[in-house]
Figure (cartoon, rainbow, N blue to C red):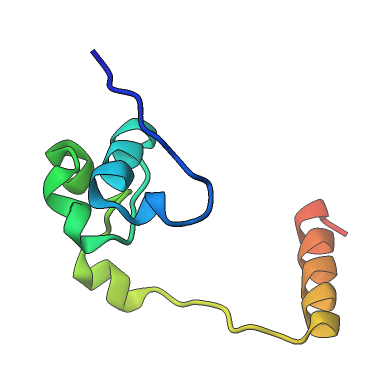
Length: 85
């Protein structure tokens, strides 16, 4: 039987390891709460599409934050690229 989880939606409950682990186990999404790892299903922790290896993480790149005007331009250029324009 699945136990209900109380969520206060104020941003504090999802940081509780038991709560975020239950969310990860249900959604199959990674979470950033390291103390929740022992509570996450081992099949989820072992899935490299959900929790990439350190080698993969070392090769990842992130975009930097831009000013709002630059962000709008980047979004528009990306949308046009995806549309094939």
